[in-house]
Image (cartoon, rainbow, N blue to C red; front, side, top):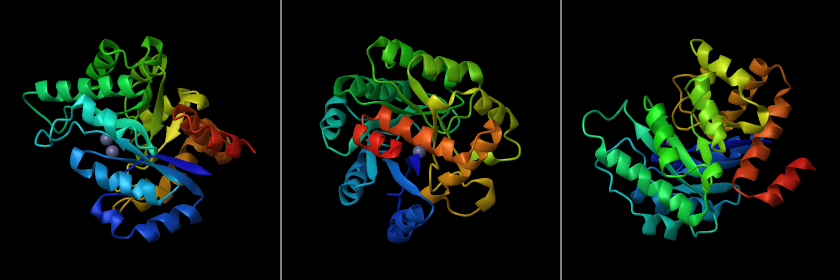
Length: 266
Ligand SMILES: [Zn+2]
Ligand SMILES: [Zn+2]
């Protein structure tokens, strides 16, 4: 069984064909997925979806990519985090690729969400684009890591160097690989993936984005997380079943879903 640690199946493109998306997951042995909100506006949609489907979990937060999205506050996020299907805060982080110029609001938005994570006791979903050094620095300054009394989390769609991966793992974060790892030009990233221990690895689609090589150009969906696992298995020289099992266990352990941890072991 595979677990997709990051997707946006509440986006209209996927939500409008949700029954098919869910049945494709089942067909491809994708047992669970984390549905990640990107603005305060879409949190209700994410929660509704996760209430309706046992195997979907929610992350509540505001993406760093769009200034026009309303700034969250700690209290609102902590309130949402009380929902039984919410397991994480995010996605949050820093994005210098999409955002040029004034970045004060981005830092503020990021710090608010780290504080919310510390207050509600739930891990963070981190988005870092051309901003990894600052992401690590702010995570440290705000005590996001398990080494600093925080709750760690996931470096989602990891596309950085080994020193960044190391710094994140030292703070108790997991490294999540997406379809990017299947691209022929992703050699450096594949090299990094080879070095990350199996007990820190997660797999994700970031659907509807980042379709793996075999369906590049088509819409991505959680079913295709198996392609990420297959590529990791090839890179690491281990059976794909082992990638599936270890990454699923990492997911359940991180989010305290211990009943699922036992089921997966059996
Ligand atoms: Zn992201
Ligand atoms: Zn995302």
